[in-house]
Length: 114
Image (cartoon, rainbow, N blue to C red; front, side, top):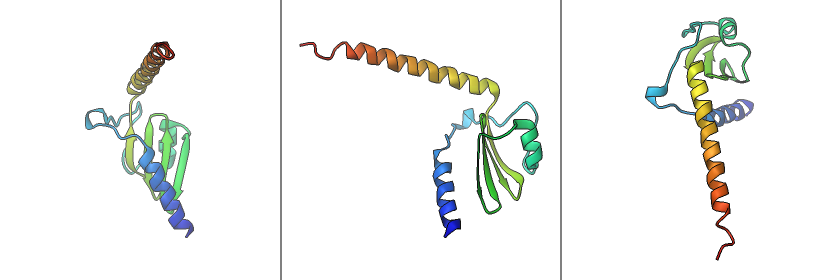
């Protein structure tokens, strides 16, 4: 039952990770990681993860630049973006928040006017 609960949690977490359009799916980092590399090499390249989920011999590590999936402590999947792409996305999010705030302020001035 514990394994089943862990699997359900993993499926929920996996469904929450952002999916990138094919043209934005960039799998590069300054130092190269490849399928089959070890946990030690992954941590040497990316540092300590922000989070981690394990189920049996399967693990998912969450980093600032994306996720790395491991099977039997070897990289089986990489979903990473570059520092430049991360910064571009942060700027876009910041601009979108500012625009929503601006629109909210504009719309709040209309309330109560009749």
